[in-house]
Structures are given as C-alpha cells and as structure tokens.
Length: 271
Image 1 (cartoon, rainbow, N blue to C red):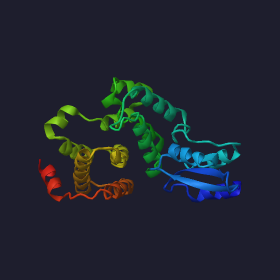
Image 2: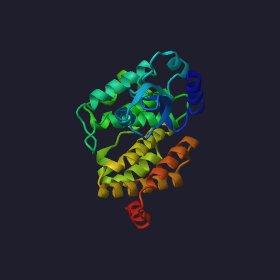
Image 3: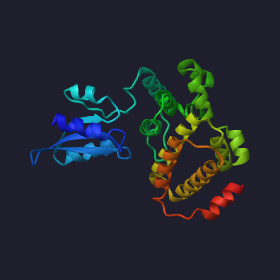
Image 4: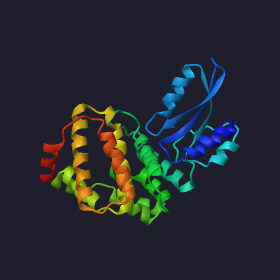
C-alpha cells in the first residue's frame, strides 16, 4: 500500500489536490485512497467519512516532503499546509493569528482562515526562488490594514523586503475613498511589483471562491468589481505567466455565477 501511496503522491504533486486520505471501509474491509482538492473542506470530508463507517488511517500532504511523510507511522497533516515548512513561515502564521484574533469573516468564520487559504494559493500557483517570502506575505497581507501594528513592526520581525510587499498589499483608505474602490484597485494593482501582484491575485481568488457564503447583492458587486480590475490590468501592464494562470483561475470561478457584466463594468471603469 505504501508503494501505491507514494506513486499517487508523486504523480499528483502540483496538481489540484492538497491532501490524500488513506481510508479503510469498515463494512467492506477495503482500503482506498481519497484525494482532497484545494477548494474542499478536508475536516468536513473526514467528518463525513468517519460518520459513514470509514476509518481514516492517514492524511498525506502533497505540499510537504513525501519521503518524510512515508517514514512516519501515522502521518496526519491536517493543519494549515504551510505551518511546517520553516520557522519564519510558522512565525508569520502565529503573528497573523494573534493580529486577527476575534476577527470574523463575512460568514462569521474566524478571519485567520482567509490568510491560510491565500498562503495555500501561493503554494499552489507560485514557483519562484522567493516563494517562502511570498507565503509569509500571504499570511501577513491584511495585518497592517486590520491590526494595531505598524510597518516598522513587520520590518523588525520579518525584514524590509517582506514589509515592503505587505505595505504594497495594504489599502490607503483616504485615496480609496477619493477615487472609489474599483478605480483605486485598478491603479494600485497595475502598479504593484510582480511579487505583490501574485499575492494580491491569490487573495482575490480566495475571495471569489468564498462568495458562495455571501448574499446575492455583495456577490454581484464583488464580481463586477473583479471583472473591471482584471480587465484593466490585462490591458495596461505586462503580466507574468504566473499572473495569467491565477487570473485564469479567477475567471473560472467567476464563470460559475451567471451574470451580465458589460454595462456595469463600463460604468465602473469610467467612474
């Protein structure tokens, strides 16, 4: 079975899957593998299987070292997938958890779940020598905006390069209110560094996926805003292959909502 697991993990690394469940059906006495996609809630899947007489024997993580996991007696990697990569990333996770303590998302879930998913998007879509720093930035991307901390706090903890990217990802509410949110984000994202834009697109992708939990009015407004921003940066800046891959995923998620963009997007772009 270990050979089968190893082959599956190796063949599906960098795919749509984040985890692999090794399951044992207590009715059929049969062992089977159940892959988990990035947009699936692994804890809900585990809960469902367990309630249907399926024993979860191990959980492997496609984003962690395969050999190390295979050597473990009972690998069970259900924690945020970036938490075990290195000490600085774990520090960023812990730091963001404290900053966002008691904060909630629109659907009343803990806010920290959002930076975790943005970090997972960075791991999935971004391939660069700077990847670890961008994972850290994903965890920290809302800390300046939503927390009682300063740019210098981030410089002291994580260095000036990371602090500068986080600053790029932080909205200036005065200018945003003057220009309007859509126009502000068009210009802001158009002028971001390539690294900051990667994280920002990973952020936008998670927000689009999370729209399923929002009311119809907010869904419509956010989709129109996203369409306008994406169109603007496609037409006005040079994008990397990574940017284009993430944008393709954003568009794929947006296509699940059947709405007409044309008139509204034009009005927003001219505002």
